[in-house]
Length: 261
Image (cartoon, rainbow, N blue to C red; front, side, top):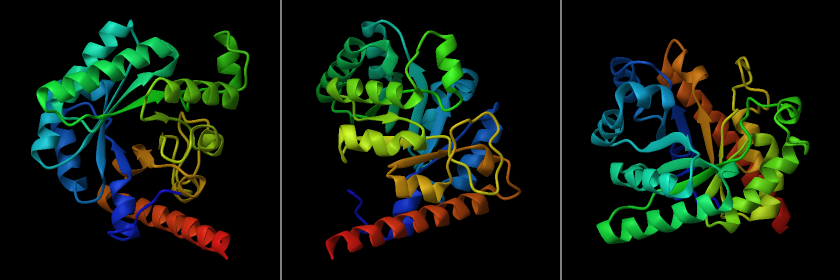
């Protein structure tokens, strides 16, 4: 794997944990940001909060020293998505995503236009991710919308398309990580929702894995929301997940060492 542990496994795990800031008020969001800023690497801002607070919430996270994954899942004609991507870059987000099913042209145009805008305006270029198949969907759900391939086949098809289009990585369930790695290589980023501590419920997620197992499978970033947000102490819950991720990294290191002997 391509992990580097210059700051230790705990620091690396924390950097790779994304907290899903799925709340409906700026007050609640800011309280969680302040509590979790020392515990997580990024805050995911999705449709609910962004529609409530707008770009203000992204700026407030940045002002506090945090990083943002803007999870708006753009899916439109290529020019429209590219323009939205440029605005995301101007906001200073570290990552944003689009739906891979929007076509290779949509992804290529977005990557190209965002790169040009970042060079022209001296902006940090965000990682651009492609959403494959939502973790809330089952094989029957796909069949009902006319996709007869199995979930893994569809995920891998979209991941390959994303890589060929110049995307930095994908958002995918932990259960497809190994196959994506095989098809797209070790440097292709995999951001993984559908992660729940062993003690937590699954809620509306159907393809779920624990943090330790997801890291062992090869995820680059884990997205966790409810188990942290609804905990009595969100900071303690985040630290517990980081500890699970550390065990996953330990398993990877042991496996790598065994492979060299």
